[in-house]
Length: 203
Image (cartoon, rainbow, N blue to C red):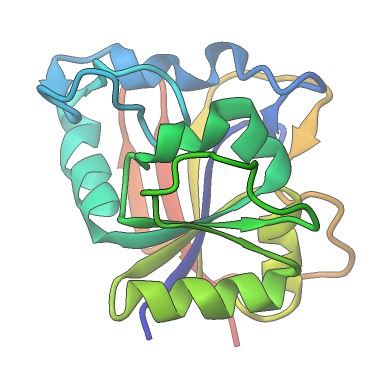
C-alpha cells in the first residue's frame, strides 16, 4: 500500500480557510512565481480547487510537481467536494477521488469520473488505498484528515504554511482531541510566500 499523507495549505495559526470556506491569501503562492505546474491544461484546477495557470517559485516547483505526480487518490470531505464541485470530475492530482459522506454522489454528476462516496473515514482510506495501489493517498486536512490521523491511518503530515494569521476559521487538524506525536520534519523548503513542511507520524 502507498503512503497516506494528510495535506493542506495552512495559515501560521493553523487554519485552512475562514468560516465561509474562503481561503483568502492562502493560495496566492500558487500564482506568484514563473514556473508553471499545470501547463497547457485549460480548465484544470490546482490541488486546492483554484483555477488553472498555476505558477510557483523555483524554490517550490520541484516539491509541488513531485508531490502532485505521486498522488494516486485524494480523500476529501463532502464540504470541500461541494465547494469545488469535485473539480468537475478531473482531480488536479491522481486518478481517483474518495469523498467521505453520508449522502450519495449527486445524481447524474460526471458518471465517467472515478469518484467514490464512502460513509466513514476508515472505509474511505481503505477504498483510496485499493484504488491508489503503490501511489500516495492524499487526505485533505480538516475534519476528514483529523479523523484519519486520530485513527492511526495517516503516515505523514504535509503543510504548506503561508505567513498570514486568520484568527478563526476551519482548523487544519479539525476538532482532533489528544496529542499526536510527529517526527522532526524531513522536508523543509522555503518558497516565496510559503514554507513547505513534511513530518512523519510517530508510531
